[in-house]
Length: 166
Image 1 (cartoon, rainbow, N blue to C red):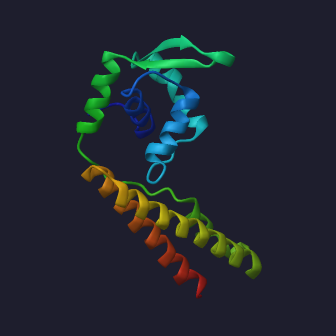
Image 2 (tube, helix red, strand yellow):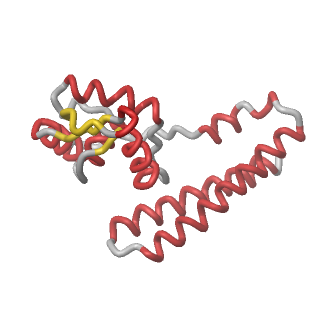
């Protein structure tokens, strides 16, 4: 069993591609995981010192404007591999949309409608993006993740249709 949390593991996974600054890790996480796992700037900058202290990353080159590169260590690679290989546990959905919907009763009808309309626009765009990624995918894992993203976006749209009809 690995002692890594999912955010730390995501960062180590990104660092497998080579050294990166905190800002590059934030961008890389959004690009690679954005459809299914969010990593915020504050999470990245909270995890990097902990990963360094644990010996999983070392400091790399100092960049412009005091940006600091991080490099995965052999211990970091071992911890990451242990995390990936660990038994799966149930996923915990963390959806700001669902949290808003649960509390939408505090909104006026106009505010609720705006919430529904803007969320539908976001998830409609996500459907379009996921379809494009799935179609362009060159490997089965990328395609499967894009198809999962597509199914998630469609489920969110169905949820919105159901709650907005009430």
